Image (cartoon, rainbow, N blue to C red; front, side):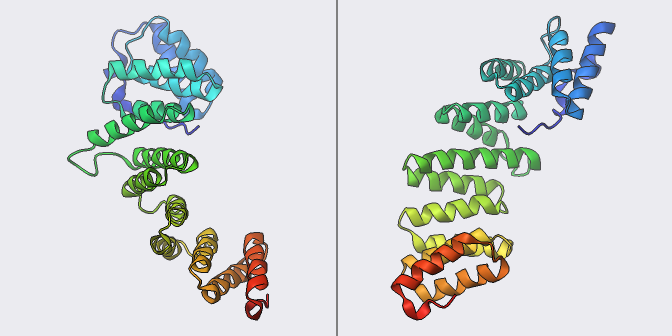
Length: 257
């Protein structure tokens, strides 16, 4: 679980009206949260929330901490409370959407992701880079689920939404390319793999999959060139070796490895 410090603006101004004990628990909980001391943060914030329940940032932190312990039901309750107190709390929306996705509640997860996207309008730059990245990864996970279920059109659409947020997430573009090929769109798949390779020449998975796509199009010679390039750059790539052996059985003239 990724743990970022909740936006400071979410906390009530100057923590007005807190007793000495409450202030101590609040500050200790936030500090330990930021330091990655999840057990210490959880203990302090649970003491705080026992007497003060109106702080949205505290419910958000508790929600992410409880997710870390595996108590997804309690985590959902805390995140929903954070959103009841602050309906535009994007970090809480993203965290709750992630939990829904983990539990297979894809429609609810997607609805929250779309709600966060709407909050960014009309300014495309309204979301910070961290939140955009979280949303992109969340949408990619949804796309993975669609792909596994055989809903390739929905998967492609969702991968593209993720890439609209973060065009340089090469791993997501690579998964889009594979899905396009599986959907019978090899030329589009090749275009996506090419973008990945231009953006990150060290992403050898894209070269391997590009070669496989070329092979399915009957372009075995081009495929062999790519697989050999992969082997030259990384002799340990067993997938490239396997594909070259496969080609050797059907195209003996290209067999030399």
